[in-house]
Image (cartoon, rainbow, N blue to C red; front, side, top):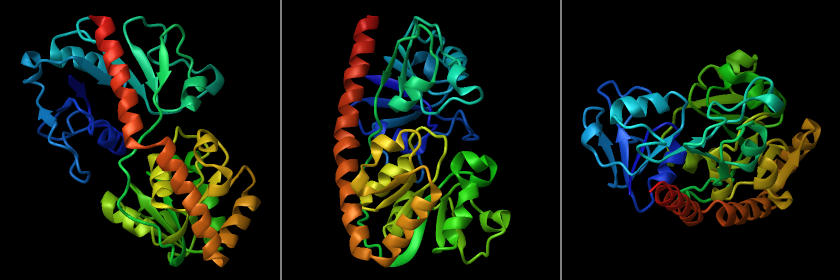
Amino acid sequence: MNVLLWHVHGSWTTSFVHGDHRYLIPTTPDRGAYGLGRARTYPWPDTAVEVTPDDLPATDVDLVILQRPEELDLAQEWLGRRPGHDVPAIYVEHNTPKGDVPHTRHPMADRDDLLVAHVSGFNQIFWDTGTTPTTVVDHGIVAPSASYTGELDRLAVVINEPIRRGRVTGTDLLPQFAEIAPLDVYGMGVTGLAEHLGVPSDRIISHDDVPQDRMHGELAQRRAYLHLCRWTSLGLSLIEAMSIGMPVIALATTEAVTAVPPDAGALATRTDTLLDAARRFLADPAAARQAGAAAQAAAREKYGLDRFLADWDRLLEEEVCGSR
């Protein structure tokens, strides 16, 4: 199939374009939000090809993957065809709802011309999509090449924009853990985090926008992975850390409670419990390795790339064949 989709979420798109289809990635001269093109820091196969808006009217497209509400109109403008009518469409929902959460209406609610595919069961039950049909395709990842060593008595965190997002990502909880061990925080927009939190710069060290392969290698050296998000879908960085073999210290919120088994580290809603777990892993590398092995087994069983692509193949075929 020829599948049109925008490059929005790097890690998810990296997994998605490893399938057996041809993936059309819009590209504009400024490589902005709606024309980012192929990834420059992720290894993508040659079947992910860049297309310009001018190319699309004459391009054969079997299905459109939408990930932002405005893409519905943008796809119609660039294709000259209506998603859901002239060409099948699936809306992938990566994010949890905002605002009055139990009552938050999804922007694609009450439609009969597309399907909403959630990336987690947690997302599906919290969004109100009305009569729009929904399904869940759990995440899958390209397994990192790094292997856990855990030789450094430090904790690793991956968060994008922790200063702006604040309590959503558990940024306010980081100083408590920085008292136990230095934190290495990776992600976009992490520069200045220690200063923002009033923590010494040798206790929270920012690593801004590190290429993925290098980041995985550095994560693997840290003793444990810290996941303090209060409200999120399911961060792929958490699954990647588990796949590397890192033990996990995580808030028992959102989809993390189904992703992280009890023997893979510590899951709790009490920070004292998580702080105790951090102390235990720092003091006992053998226990950290044992928990990390359980985390790795769980991640590779549930979030393997082959399962993810097979699930998506079934869904793509159902939508395209059903439309025809």
